[in-house]
Image 1 (cartoon, rainbow over the protein chains, first blue to last red):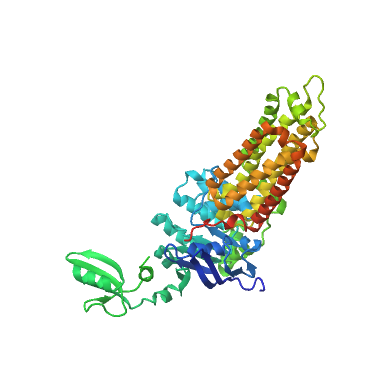
Image 2: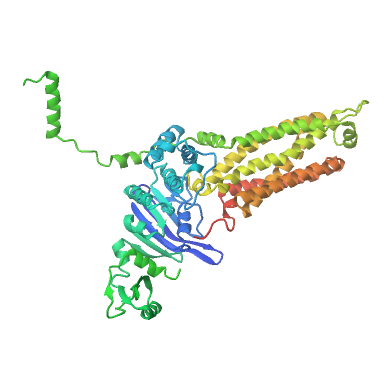
Length: 291
Length: 279
């Protein structure tokens, strides 16, 4: 493949199996500049897929390329930024040490690494604590440090595994804004099971279940699967119970003398039911209702 | 009001900016981000990695060797007995009339240094445990110079220093026993290689701190075997048994090389079952 022309990340029928469980099942995907939100329940295969894209796990079959470079090549890793779901740090490291160490692994010369680390610490709001030990950091601060390390080499591909997990709502919004900005000039793949994160920033949503991509597209396209099928109604307790047995119920809100139900069904479940606007959360709950 | 020359210039400049507004540069950020910034040279990378070896590794290595050098003479006693026992054709150690011969001294040194070789090996292997023990492995593996390369560089650096230290030990043993250099090095390196092989093998099946514990057990077992074996030194260091040492050396060396290749290919160490969860 000719390099430099197609800045695409290509996943070609990649599969990964652990003993008798297929974690990733023949996924083929082509990604270009933009933010891709990988949505799925725990155990759907998101992390396995991301680890394969990062070259940490070798697929049992299939290939991964970026700009003609194979996932196993040093050049590919040079284009990559990765924030794992969980990561640690050497106990003696300060925030600056942490970044300088990873910059060394990324092949960045010492002087440039120092400048880059200082700039990134500032941009993630950790400039004032650069010389503090990482072990003294809160979860949110560590997560911000994590994203700073992922950006050290100005990656063309940025893989973020559950980047907003453990962040408070304010930090999550800040994080989302930062990711939005980053997605303008690179491929960003972020996995989450927090629907609102994906809903707000992803250009393309990938719904993953049982190791396969079940749906992919923009928010509007994805929601079409349940568009016009989301209904709300008020019912007393016995009726609510009967409806819950018959249809997939997305939400039950207790009210005086009964409940307000939100459910997915192809036709009107009750005469008094009214059609509600479908959201990504509806789709998510509908698909992952058994998990 | 009449303007001064300087004020006139400033005013003209201000007005001109209004007539011909300069467009903000388009794609400047993207252009800069695509510039091929210089990368660290391979040597710089190696030196940086050596610098990141925990200082305690060097300190402990030095302390262990100093302790071994002190322990040799401290437990020396009358070396004549050793020399007589071991002088049966295994070296050229002569036993003078006063009985205080270098032959016994040399074997005591050989014993004390070979007893710390497993600990030195463990320090080298522990460097490979640190990443997974502290949860850094994934980030390190996704970097340009990925973890296996880095571990190899570090382990070889520590191995080189251990080799230097063992040369010191071997020189004392050679002087004191009359053993040849190759034979002294084999006696010293078998415990080192054995510990490395066993600890790296343990790392295939256990991760992080657990693997470190297994490594410690391996090192302690090898060290204990060597220490205990001193009681049977005539048999163990005897000329007749040397071919067994040589066979063990070759075997451990081959397995160790294979493990190193495995680290390089990421095939051995990082494909351990149960390494990653399925989520």
